[in-house]
Image (tube, rainbow, N blue to C red; front, top):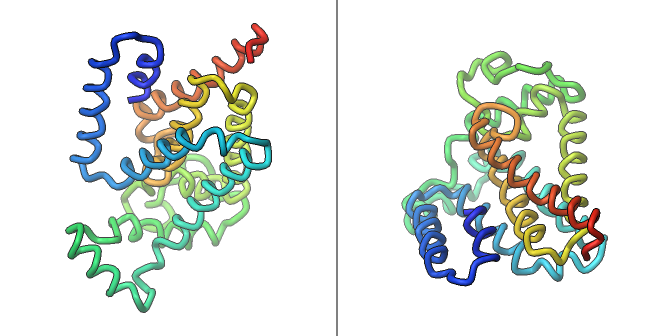
Length: 231
């Protein structure tokens, strides 16, 4: 989808690309993958409200932090929902109107992983550590942020978030460029996607390499424009 949107900016006859985009959205909706749909929605919101988000440095950083804080709250609060006294009511509503449970099964993995992380909170259990090594659960965490915290502690997770913020601030150097705007929107979608999968560092590296490539397109565009002194 990213490369279709990228190409459509520079062609006169856009009909074929609109069809591809429509098929892409249909596939995303048809898959029923809530993580993909949520990531897509956040990308669209970022793109539409880009002028407002990037009006000044404060708003730009604040938007990124809102996304990160929202992700952290989701990751650490979501597994606790079944213990909430009103959970059965909302679970029944969800099943009635969508046919799906609020819980996806990831909570069964995330909860013990979070407990394990809190036992080694600062530096984690070391690179290469898997959930089975500390929880006995032979499954992936399906969450990049928890995986980093498990292996490198909350300190490692903090450093990783700083790295993501650094990438985000690079996009601020050329806000008016359409490619940079598109990459930044997909960057936010990638952050959302990584709260459900592990692709940027391990596991699904075939997907992760494509996501890193998308990020690098934006960074290289900023570097090129700055070298040419193009606003």
